[in-house]
Length: 399
Image (cartoon, rainbow, N blue to C red; front, top):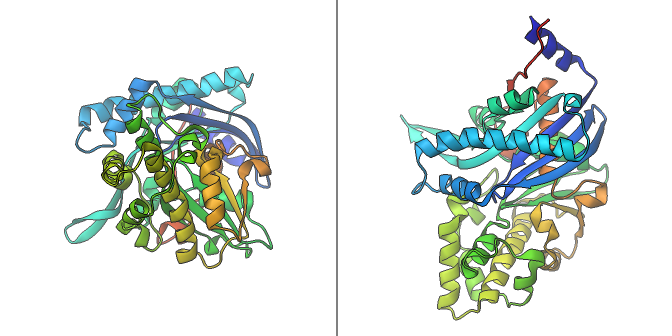
């Protein structure tokens, strides 16, 4: 009885304080956003990023590689990340003097380790699948807070690709009555949400454009023997020259020609792809900085190409978020390829560009507890709207 009463209280609230937790395809750490959410208002209270310890990041990246992954490691790291996610939230609350008991919900995306949007055949039928770890039962137990997690599988069960999920939040946060907008996340993978001025969620189009920072990061790590994990401020790329020959070779990847809905990840653009790109650059006689510049240009080019190929109209405003929004060289390359669009960042709307994805999962958790469909079938390809997320009750006091 105690649990049902507490869950009823959550269902009937008008305003919530929700922590959104996630780690993206770059697997560099845990983003935490604490947001006050009501039907017509959102206010970010705090944001932080807690890096994975280097050994944990290595474990996670190995799990994403079918040739290195082991079932016992998946089992272990699932619970390990659940603890790290909970500890990251507790640390953020202490840092920002936010009482833990003031939180109503946690929305956790977890950590994707594999995603098969194209699916595999079983008895003549295509079965799509996806796997996110960071055990939410551990998060709920260590924090005592009801946790909503594992958002992607329900969309896949409805015939979708389980991604992208953030268009629901993009629609709430950035839709405009007169302007065509694109919300462009550049994380490990780059993905776009196209928001037409109609204001109808059914008119939204969203999909993965291709690699974001993933290949840039991997190439920098290769050429520095692991001393650097990314191209800070695009400094290395700015010193190089883009190779048209190498760029054209990269653009032949079949993913770029696929029509939406489409998603991708490390299974297509992981370390093996990055090594091949790097070796191809060396074979062409390119300098290391030229290879990084070309990898950066690949991200910019595939975003611009995706807009021209697949969007109903070119956006008047492009709102950047994710780590790529902090890369001036990448932003310059993108601006040259989209001269008709005004480039902005979510910071221009009062939303930290690095926090935006975590904020999105707080919003998805809010919708789930209210029983609102929080997928966007026009983006994922699902047969119908659905309420995404599994609810793990917190530790309620005895009555």
